Length: 203
Image (cartoon, helix red, strand yellow):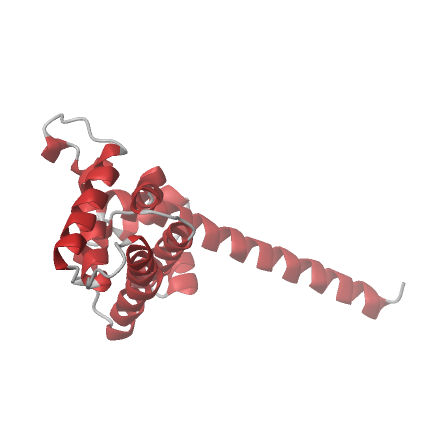
């Protein structure tokens, strides 16, 4: 093997290892974000906490995401999109609520609060559009499908109502429930309420 070929192999190996390290660093930061932002929200999480949990240094965060807000946005878009995909596969309101709460991957109400703390207008727009496209619209489509025939409902408004109400069963609000046991039955209650409201507006 010639000197040039040997050099090319060395450089290829270095580039491969660098790319692998970059992917690993990015993944570790997102994994830390998934834990911290899901538990505490954007404002309460510090860069120091992210770095400590990920085991990385600040330059890695800034290289991959620019800053904490950039990391938050990528995590939020991913979490919302994943939940939205699962929600879109459901056939009824009960399935929607169960998909939303499964693994408690994020708190919808916290996401709405977090958006108020985002400084970059593009970031804010990205999260807001993702909520609308990946959560609100799929839920609204399901509500339209399960509503009584002839009922006139604002499915977009009802979707917001459902997502808000479902959060009552989220682990983050356990203390607010004062020990009340809430499980899948909350979905049935919400669904019945929506159906009753829709029936009242039917011609």
